[in-house]
Image 1 (tube, helix red, strand yellow):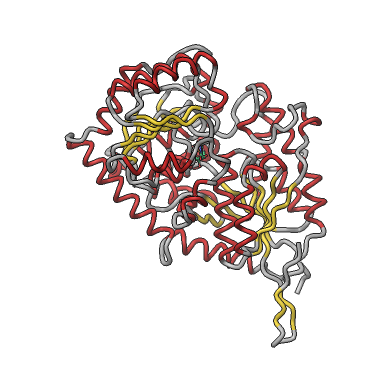
Image 2: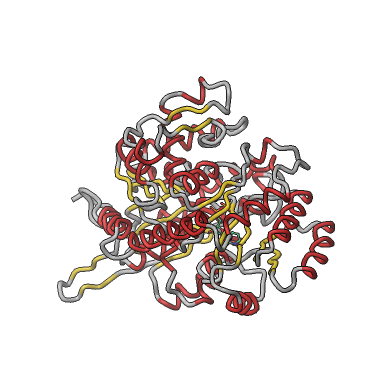
Length: 509
Ligand code: UDP
């Protein structure tokens, strides 16, 4: 792609700053990266967004809109090396990896991208001035280096997790702790006593660090090295949602940190059809869904969804359904394609019949961000993926926290203990620690948590709602002109524009 602004008055040709975005091919990472592409393009930065055939087909309507609106985003589609990495054909996103043992292969596949990326970037005009690589794409830093381009890291997870993992790594806690449940005071949070009444403690199980699992050693070392050597850090968070951790992280990391979120708010004023198309094609008749939501009372509906990767076993799904039914609350429940076993399908038939007046079940991809922004939605049962958490926060929706892995336990604690806008369902261990058919949460736990969250007369529930509305206002403010994230985006754009000592073609001046 060549985009050149011809400044005929000065008789000179100036190229716009050009940034390459390399997302991790996982929904929780590509969706916010795509939001960022639009944010930067709106600020006159030319963006090249790296994608693959399957991933780009999922966001076709968004690509079409970008082209229509003439936003300067160039989608570069590179073939994904499934066969070379021993993955099934078309397995181009984490949510398509069929079995756990193939995750290593997936990481191998994305590493094979390096050569293809380098080839495609070499001759790009104008020359990229900067690359923003997902933290989990450390190989991309080598490409940037070989092309003499500055490189920034994009953190998909929350800062509470990034910071805790970072200091645990620095203090060699991962090497010394033998009891994964041992609560360790997080170093460097000097002023946190006011916030939680005591020092903030975390166990290794809930701050597992990056890819700290057997088989991932090389990838983990590469990730840490790339983060260490990056020129700066971009984070999808905002200062008011986790101030203690953002501040502490900025202090220790020793480079520029730009908090630019919540990126999900970027498209909040798009029309509904655009907001529905986020990340993938919705597996539902959207008109029917939003008519149903329109017909429900304000804040009466509970939305239940566990992100793009978590898979529940049959027993757990039935237990959730029974708890939801017993709670008496209207609900919108998302069940993934991979969870739709014949037993689940069969059970759902009866459930949907009994619950026809107060339930809507989506089987497959849900238009989540649009759902959470609907006024009928008053609660969210969530696995606490960082994007889901930010989407709830940005819409003032209180949560029932049911973390599964990675940053989700700490996100849950942020929601329940620090923001105080949620109820913990009570899971103590990551999903992998349970047997395949184990059922960590029972019907009664679900019913109890739902009743307290949605309770219309409970004082606590009302206070939670008030706090959720307050943090929503802060999230919106952060993204508006003058807000912390808005101003950080301005600084980030300045950084991208001004490559010290070089002109836009990368020539030393
Ligand atoms: N998402 C969605 N529909 C679905 C499932 C997920 O729109 O049916 C979106 C969700 O809104 C969020 C992202 O996918 O933006 C999931 O990211 P998150 O960090 O919450 O969890 P992950 O999927 O990475 O576990």
